[in-house]
Length: 198
Image (cartoon, rainbow, N blue to C red; front, top):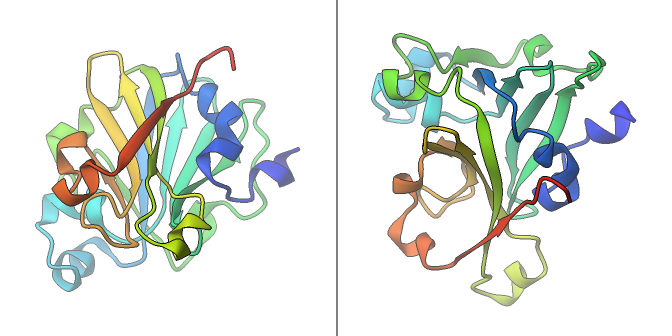
C-alpha cells in the first residue's frame, strides 16, 4: 500500500489521505528547498522571512498520530501533487525527502527563513481540507487536471495553501495564505471541500 501512496498524484486522487488530515494537529512543516536558505533568498530575490513560503522545493506536513504528507507541484499536470512520506502506522517511503542530499530542510519555525506568523501554525488542529481547481484558459490546459491548490483550514480560522502558481500565475510551487493568491488567478478558481466521511 505504501508504494502506491508514495507516488505523487493530484489531490483528488489522494483525497482519502487528505481527508485523514482532518482532526489532526500540525506538529511540523518543513520546506525542502533546492537551495540553502541564504542562497534562496539571494537567487530568488526573497526576503529572508519569505524563504519558507516561496523557495523552490516540496513541503512536508507532519501531524499528530504520525501521518506525514508531502506536497509539491507538477507543471506537466498543471497541478499540485500529494504523497505519503510516512503512514500513521509508521511505514515510511523508501526515499524520504529528508534523505535527499540535494534538498535543504527549512522548518516553519526557523528564526531566519520563516516568520512568527508561519510558525504559529504548529500546534493548530486541521479543521477542513479544500481542493482548488483552476478553470483552463486554453485547449492545452483543458487536457490537464488543473488541481492547483490544497487549502487546509485550521481550528483558529487560519488557512495554509499548498499551491501551484497561485501566488504569481506561474508553474512554481509555494506555501501561501489565501491573501497571497494573485488577483488574476483568484477569479479562475473553484473550490471543492472534502467531506470527512467521503
